[in-house]
Length: 261
Image (cartoon, rainbow, N blue to C red; front, side, top):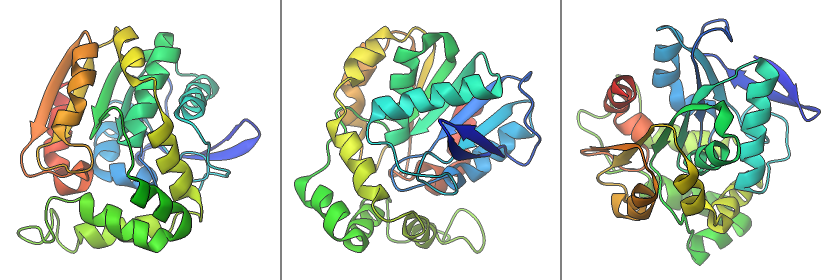
């Protein structure tokens, strides 16, 4: 599904079902150097179980026109514009990593649009090491290798992957490789420079679910402790054996957490 937002084409995946704004809406927001496809299982499940699903390609990512937006605040307003454009008055936002920052900022800036909020693989501050940030600018291939290694709980997954024919690390590497040149640096710099997380979360009044990977070294559970203190109405789920790439390493466990919420 394509929409014109701010004069540019935005590509939105609806989970294999026609979008119906009269249904309860869920918006899935991917992380840095990714696109809507990371939510394949979760978006399709909810689209086929009574929800209106919008799994976005953020500006400059996937099939959406660029350029990539340079701040979390700009991206949060872009999500709000999307909801207003498609005629959704309230939605549940589900964001992973950078997407979790976008979701929490959107919830703070546009509370009237939020029903519930889900933060997956989140942390604040979401600082990026100088070495990695420089690599995203100067050597994307090296940066992708670092991120791919740090995003997963193991080099191999027993019995090889969550599904037959599915190579967890290989799929993630190819997903990053197909993003537009320069997007990785813009994304990681936006995460590194975002400072409003605690203030944003303290203002949120809708129910919030945090889903964290117990073996996540990119955004370890301890890095979300201050966020947890700031959020008034929260539930926390920590998934055993999951690194940062929770959607692909533990897709069923994440789906179960979303369903119960």
